[in-house]
Image (tube, rainbow, N blue to C red):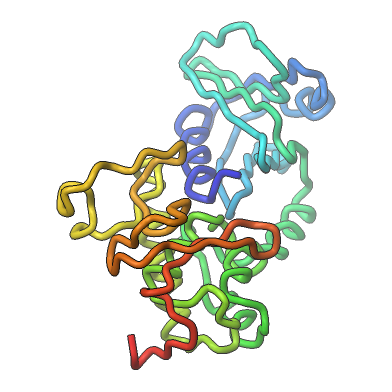
Length: 276
């Protein structure tokens, strides 16, 4: 599932391509035909992302909500748009280009009240200027659930996925199984600040890079990471490999149905802030 930085990139692309313009809207596949008919010819006023949700706001107060889920994909290109191929759920087109959406988890029209209900269910998004990390802290501070699970809960923090979860906990030196209520406020603030930094880098580059300069391939004399997700990381999908910092073997397990990665040397259990 794409993490939040990808959805923010999609919002930026939609804004550049269609913002302030009347948009031709169609559903070649037919599954969104009624909604497409209501939007066809309307002006896209604003495209924005909130966590993993893309919101396209049109001039009649309707909002097109897209959640890619596991299988959703976007194809964006220059005009003129080619004939659609495959199961294109939604096509937006203008003289400036086109955007084809396939296989989303959600593609629906929302009224203003429904948008508010959606956003009320989400935690703060580290990539938004209006984000309030206090909202997440209030949930974390009273929770017995592990911080690894809390960071994947979109009602706590909206946007991060498995990669950012693993990497910010490594960079913070935190055991992923630490209960949320055992974190200090300083630790939470550090996690939040790191998410803001790393995810903003992801928006700019389109990939997730989390290693510090001294651990990059050139600095360490090691080959670059080869992985379909791209980017240089410390622990994500590095099971059994040597930690780039302490050389301990990176470990992995399953937690709440998702793969979890950590370094036992850099993220030992029970470590308190004064010891780090």
